[in-house]
Image 1 (cartoon, rainbow, N blue to C red):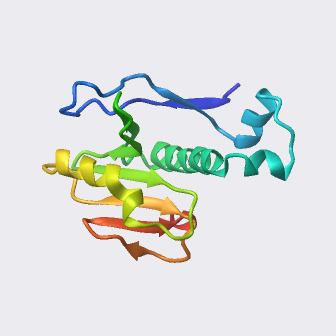
Image 2 (image 1 turned 180 degrees about the vertical axis):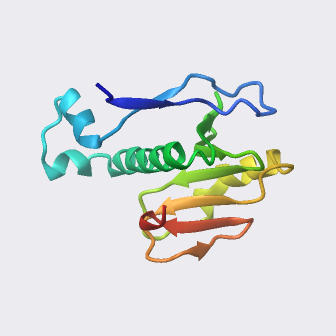
Image 3 (image 1 turned 90 degrees about the vertical axis):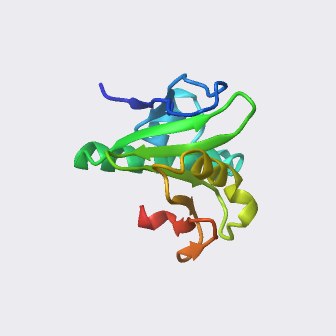
Length: 151
């Protein structure tokens, strides 16, 4: 039975402190909640909606990339806490993606994206922040906030 997928760590970092353990995602938040014996009530989601949102985005990205074979889904995290939720690696470029449960993304939400873009400048020209914003927003530094429904 197919219940989930792993997202490997991005290994092309100049940081020696980059973590390399893959992340596991259930293919569906409902299956994850059932396995963890989390009741199907709104308060369960409200305790940490960002986690569920990130999990949902992971599933959408993984399905799209699996279907189109347009790239590989990775993540980036260092031992000092810097994290980019997802990195799409294609033959030509790296596309970092941050996921935030907010309808008003700010510059502060993009700090790890900016660092990643600067470190990988030879193959990374832009980044995205997926959020609940109502429309695309230019956050500067080659970073665009996009609504969740645009993924």
